[in-house]
Length: 70
Image (cartoon, rainbow, N blue to C red; front, side, top):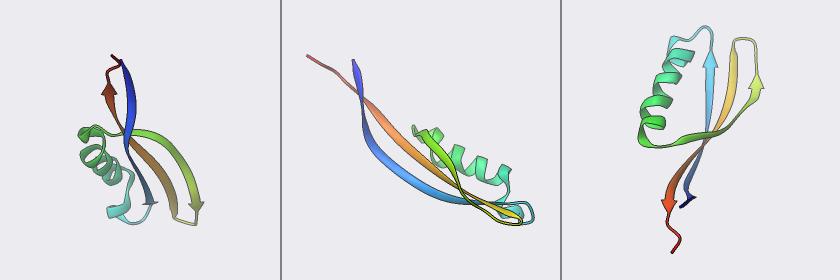
């Protein structure tokens, strides 16, 4: 059995040390609820930009499905 990629998503997320709605805990819960619990996997993360109180993180998500070879 093998796997194939069926979906791909890229999200740019702003983490902020002074805005509670952009905190690490808030974004972690969002990612868990909307991606990881839905069968997505994190393919790659990268820091896109960093500023005084914010970090912009690019996250690539993928979804796979099993493929049977006959």
